[in-house]
Length: 313
Image (tube, rainbow, N blue to C red):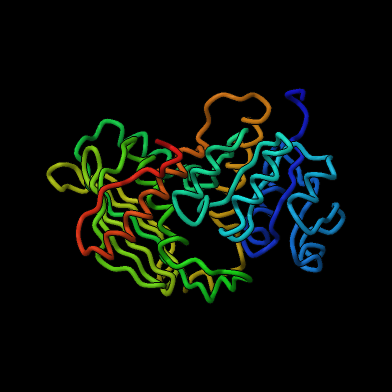
C-alpha cells in the first residue's frame, strides 16, 4: 500500500457511537475513508451510511473484500468475535473500548495476529497530551479522574454494560497513560450498576476514580504532587456547560475531534507502522485486569492486587 493511498475502513456496528462519533470523525479524518459497514440491523445501517456496501456481520463484510482495516464498534460482548473475523483475514483492527467483558477476553484479543489496537480516544485530546508532557517530571503524584453522563440521554440501542465496564476503562487507561506507570492494586468504595468509585495504587502515587451513568455529563482530571499541591487540572462538561449548550447551536463535540485524531493515527500506523499514541491490545489487558480487580475488591471489601489472565503469563 502506497503512503499516499487512503486506508479503506470497514465499520462494524452502527449504533449511537457510530452515529455520533465514528461517522462524523471519518469525515474529518485524513488518510482514511469509509468503504463498508456491517450491522445486524440493516435498516439502521443503511440510514447511517447510505451509498456504501452494507453487510449484516463482520465476517460477511471481511469476506466481501475491498477494505484495508476494520473498526469494531459493536456491543462489548461481540468484540472478540468481530475482531477475530478481521484477524482471520489478516486485517488490522481498531476495537472500541472496553476490549472485552473481562481480562480473559482482552487476552484473547491480544493473542490475535495482527493484534488490534484499542479505542481509548482520550489519548488524543490535545489538553490531555499537554498535561501528560507536563507530568513527565512530576513524581509521587495523586490523581482524581472522573467521568459522568446520563445514559438515558445517550439513548443506546443495546447497552448491557454497568458503569464500571462502560466508563472506567477510559479512566484506568488515562491513569496509566498520564503517569506512564502500572497499577499494583485496587480498593473499591462503591460499585452499583450506575456508579463506581475506587482507588488505584500506582507504582509511584495513587489515583481516585469516579464513574457515574446517571449524572450530567462531565469529565475531570486533577493532579497533585507529593505535597498534595494542585499542579494540573482538566475539565469538560458540567452543569453550567450543559445549560450553555442548550442555549446555542450545536457545535462539534470533543468526542468527534478526538476520534478523528485517533483514526488519523490508525491510518498512519497501517501505512507506516511504528509507535503511535494508539492503545495496544496489551494496554487493553492491563485495563481489564484492573476492572476485574475492582469487582473482586467490591466482593472482598478490601485491597486486591492486579492479576493477569492465564493467557498472558
